[in-house]
Image 1 (cartoon, each protein chain N blue to C red):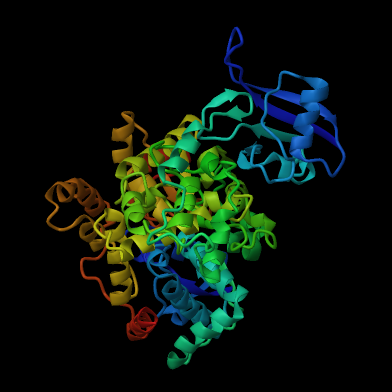
Image 2 (image 1 turned 120 degrees about the horizontal axis):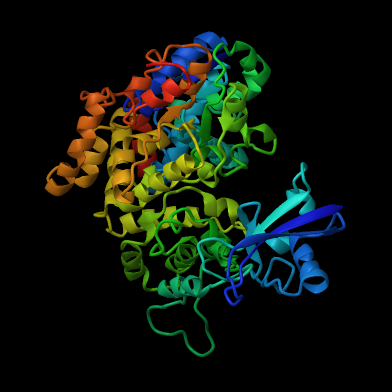
Length: 319
Length: 296
């Protein structure tokens, strides 16, 4: 098959460092991966192309990059699945949200710093088991942790995270999935303080639930699902004062009360009626909405048949 | 074409113009919306209830899906979030018969049972899959020639692709672009079209939320868009309702009109802008309407 790999290039050490796209056209077999194509370029066409790769088997996590705008492992992506039918092109760019060192190689230091920030090691509690024994964990608990443990730290989720795009202080999906792995470990004794740390700004509540990480993860880690689980665990552990926790609580109460959201009171109750500075900030929003006929009804009616929904709340919450 | 209609909270609250414009276009498209089956349906949980209690959220959605299934009609949503959240619940329920059976046990008291056969369709998908682009083109009386529209899907209508059944329906992936073109308008493509609008963190991290609004609206504007079009009222709330704050934070004027999908359709189908309530937006649509030779 005829293929054109259009590679985003950048070399800071060149005389005139600039970003440009270079097209490489060549023949590849139908079973070739994007990584096969890039290696062919480096070894046979243009030795100046920089990229990271190692195992070629989706195990080492070195070759995450953007293919046609979405993060994936180059070694795990067949050219024939991503090639444009119109012009035979595949666009290859470095992973996003990380600084480019050269061509397709990005700086992973902030990635490792954030993983490190969640203390990714076990902090067991109680006396150490004797020399002939080991810490014992329940099978079901470990099965649940198998998902996040499958993470190969490739950075695909970090590359495409929509929050990191606007705020590099966010811990991000990879580090938070790693945090879940230790909070959920039955042998760990530091869950309470871990959840307290994760409850801080830049932690679990800054995720927008955009599902980008879920979609691009090559290993089915479901980072966003882990972040949602951490939110639930944090609220259960008593960390229920953040706007995020209050929003979830007020929202849930509203659905139980009337079957739907009271859009007028949701922001007011989340921020707190006596939170004067925040209430003042909401005034122009309210005025604009009122002027444009967009103010939600002041009297919030409950849905017909709401008693059935309330019964389900009681039943499920009791179980 | 008849559907069990699930309007969602926002179309009945802060985005009445979405509700109104949907009614207007459905008359012309021959889409009959039946309110009765979903009259007692609840909120989908919007991804938030799922944080607190996934099983509870799945139970409420199983109830909603059972109501639609009982009517024998496909369920129509007009909100990316409602659609996505229900699709995800549907996927979980159908994948695990034991889980579904235990939830059905809770629904039995109301005489409901979900058998896993409900068909869920966002209006956008119904346009492409049920109405058909050819028929849609034939109904256009005021082609939107020269009108440059930037699509903005809303996360829940593009991810995760498995729950949204993109494999069985590959046309869903670029359905919004196809509809824009069918109306005679030009698509302004930009990377943010499938990104997050920032609404879910509006009350949690306003600074980040405003950066997202500014990034997307400015990007669309810089690429020459006359307006952005969205099938998600929550994206609309943030991109339209909070654009003044976003512009302030970005320290530059943006003035990007944000249209609900049925409003853009309505313009091409010859419905008066006022009937589509295009004057009910925070960001004025006047200049945009004068450019497509219409006035509000």
